[in-house]
Image (cartoon, rainbow, N blue to C red; front, side):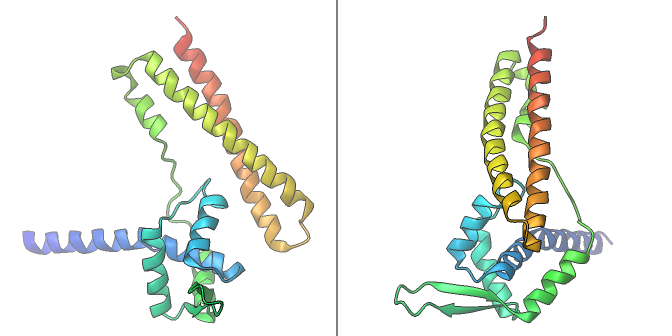
Length: 195
């Protein structure tokens, strides 16, 4: 009885872990649906275009590319320039998988900020230490908000292509979210500085 329950829990945990890991597959398919890319270029797009709401490491990208290729969702081709770059492109099977995922409801949208975790346990550190964390968080948000506002300004000029509207809406979500974070920073500092 206990052995079977343990096996079932292990299988459930494994399937949940695999479901979370597979999100990188859809990130890759989405990027390749736009244009063929190398693994390095995929990482670069994630770090620049998606960094405000998604991340991916080389350690997750390359195994995902191998699995997607083995499943027939992407194809790879070695660049003929002699530099040995491998360029990946999406296949029809990959597009179908991407579309299938896109129509499903989102499994989880989550907010994870280490600053908030430290704030939650902040009694141990004290007000000054927490104020320092909030100040650093605020600086980071201000810098990233400037980047997002620059993206929005550029995207507002090129809304002739359908995909640019989706990019712009994503950026606007980030802008509104970051503005709310800044308002929260002001409120949090006022509360902690009051005595």
